[in-house]
Length: 140
Image (cartoon, rainbow, N blue to C red; front, side, top):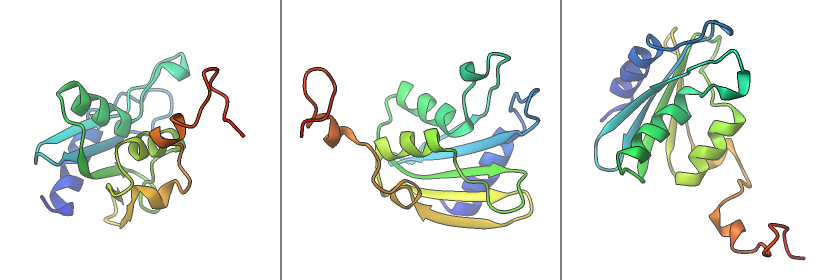
């Protein structure tokens, strides 16, 4: 699947966003290595921490369907430049692979593509977990 199609799917997901507080709808389209696409949109809540971003929504849908390997994700928002994932979403993408292509786009047609690893250098990963002690603190 090409980037243009993923961006179009993300735009469609953006239309379904629930963003009554920020008025900032975002859509995402996540391409699994299987070839299946999972879309997501941001879903806000009056209790702000209870909301979910579009990217994490798409990842959660994919994982709940059994997909664990991803090749690309498109993220679309009405921003000046290409819409970038927030920090939490960057960490979630890093969990599933530093080589995931992150296609950032806006409604004006601006696009930027980077690897997930480029968005979060030095990400905390499962490898870091193997170096922790029983209490969760890092060993020196």
